Length: 216
Image (cartoon, rainbow, N blue to C red; front, side, top):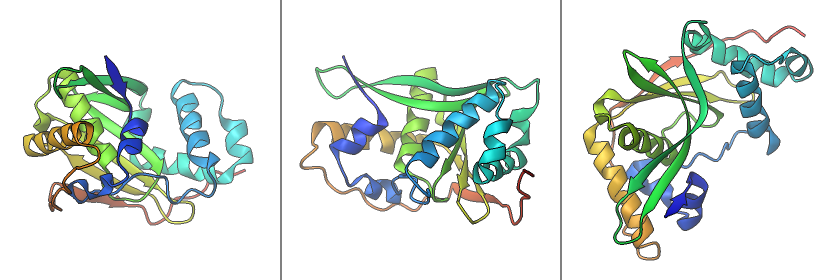
């Protein structure tokens, strides 16, 4: 069995941004290449209850990002809320005789018994094909109707206020994503360019005008 990650899919085809008119998440606004990885590690330490104040004291930009996440999704920091961070999820994909699985890393909590995905990154406030693949995997992995799933994205920026985006999923998007994955994996050199579909389910929920930095 072959297990492919988002990084593997990116290497297979450099034109994924055309999929459903979605862009590619490459942390384009990061100040340097270490910022995204360091921030993800910091958030994991925060949710695990490990001490992070020394890091916040010496990295005011990361302190601001943490403050923005806490302000935009305060429900995740309630003690009674169960939340899983950076969890590997795998879903099988039928592409012929060769068994293939797609693996993604997701953050999610439960809302009325259904998982809700969360993503925070130094990125543009636009839906990406990586977002679509994560929702597809989650639906297949748990055999959940796509309409029950949503993804909350916190788009962080080195100088601009954070933005909160909610991606509501449905069966049409689920089928389109699966078909795109099959085409990508079975016809990597002759993949027809998908049409640019306008998706009205993506809506910008919140624009944070001002968030105070964590005092040093």
